[in-house]
Image (cartoon, rainbow, N blue to C red; front, top):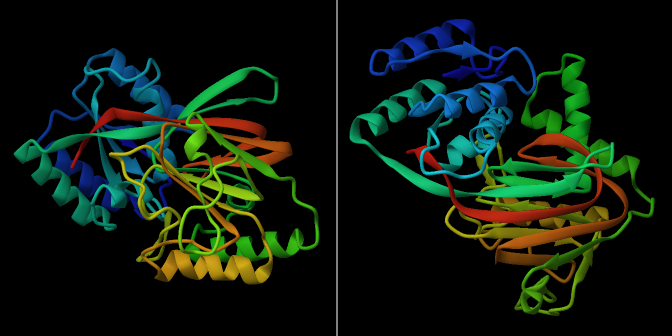
Length: 327
C-alpha cells in the first residue's frame, strides 16, 4: 500500500484506520511516499517483486505515479493489479471507477471487491513528448491530458499550493478566471489536431447538429479524455468528453475561440448538458487510437491534473486493457 502522507482528504488518524481495515484481510506492506516520483519507484519495485496488488491511498497524482511505475516496462499480464482509496481533493480516477468520494466508504467498497474477486482491465492513455533537454520522454495517463489553457491553470494551482494554499474547487475556479483575464487580448498560438485515421480527423461540430470538416483542425486549447468525467466540481460531474470510456479509445474536445462568452457557454455545457460541449467553435473526436497535438510555440501541458511542462508537440495513444484494476 502506497500512502501519500500529505493527501488533502485524510488525516493521520483516518489513514491509520484505513490501513488497519485493509491489513485485516490482506498481507499488506505499507510505505509512505517521501516526495514526487517516490510512488512510481515503489510501484515499479512491486512489479519487479511479483506482488499481486498495489493499493494507492492518495489523490490522482499518486495514482498516476503508481500507474507509471507498474507499467514502466509496458503492459503485461503479470503486472500487479491497482486498487485506489481516494485521499486527494478531487479523486477523478477512483470516482470514475465507481468508488465513493469518501475514503472510508471507498475502503469498504474495496474490501468487498477483493472478497468477491472483482476486477477489470481498463485502457489507459500514453503520451510521447520532448523534455527540456531535447530528449524524447513518455508517460502514462489515466483519465485526461491537456495542452493550453487548462494546463496553464494546473500550473498556476500548483504554484499556489507550494505556498500553502489548500487545493479546493474554488482555488481552481479562481485560478482559471485569473489565467483567462491575464491572457485576454493576447494572441494564442494555434494547436493543430491530427490522428492516425485521416478520414476521422477533428470531426468538428459546426452548428451543433452534426459532423463538419474532416480536414486537420486548429484550436486554441485541447483536452484529451480517457474516461468521463474530465473532473468534478465538488459532487458535480464536469463532462468535457461525455462518451469517453476506459473501454474505448481517446476522446478530444478543442475550442477554436476563447472569448469570455464562448468559454462561459462551453463551461455550462460541461456542467449541465449530457451531450457535452457543442457549437461552431467546438471540435470533437471520439474513440481515437492516436491523437497528435502540434502548437506553433510552446504551450503548457498537463496529465491527470499534474503539470508536465511546456510543449510544442505531444502524441497521445490509447492502450486498450493496459492495467487490471480492482472494482
